Length: 219
Length: 219
Image (cartoon, rainbow over all chains, first blue to last red; front, side, top):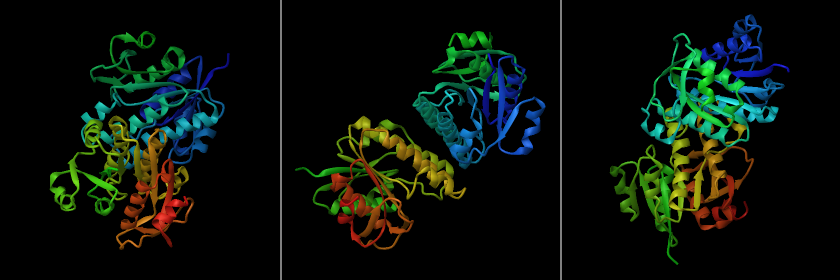
């Protein structure tokens, strides 16, 4: 069987870099890194990954072109909660939705969304005024994806750290907020790509005590 | 027949104030002004309009409660394109969607959305970086409304001015951008409330040469 080819949108982010590296190490997966400009390419080329330069603030067609021939798309681009709110709406919301629409155009069924820990209405109301717009952006992106017939998985990671990955997590829903290393989020994405049991599901992930693959099986 | 009672969300805005005033002058309509705080009430009380104090950044239930017993809702709240982008996403997008959801909860079928002149994808791409987030917010609010089974009308006014109303407009689609006085937008809203031909439709409005009621008939 051919390797599964995966387009990583937001490859140059911290989760994205771990992810491309894990994918290139995998026997079954292959990465195409979507980046904003050519200067970001060498990191991925050194890993033997394809790169494609696309502006996420551009049109759906350019993203669809970048997605041609891939088997899955991972959206892990994020302006993050602390960038200007113009980027929150242009990237975290509209960039995500355009990527979902591009998946449809390119005929790519499998879609993995990296959301935030809690994007429910209650979480918007509970968020601080400076964090709430980010939660709203992720809420609408998640809602848009749920409304499609794509084979989606929505991953809701806890507070991200740069700690080394442990490959030990807990996965579920209605968890108490906690931390998780970005490297372990990347492992969860790989495990989701390799386990079709995650299709049509969404779950929170935190650092924990279960091996990633076991935790994923029981969601 | 009893008068049609209309909840105006964003009553204290410039269009909102003209609108409440026109509605109170009408033989067939009656206004309930939704405002952010009690200090804004006297303007509307002097017009003989009901007021209800609700924070649009609060929950759907408070908006639904404000909408109890009305026959129509007009959403004309707007942080405007020049406020902070946090308000763009919290008010122009999420405030609008919460109002739509509140209409469903309260069983109010008729919904009039004051959008911006062009909220299509092409308009997002063509917008300046500082204006684009506002267009994106209005795009998602309009899309959300189109996806409901409410009796909606989406009005797309041109560049708003504070000129005195002329009651002369042009209405249509794919118009070249131009100006329209806020007072005339308020007249268009009243005409839409009074003409069920506008249900399920959306149109652009600019200053023009046709009387508002005639222009509305031909959309």
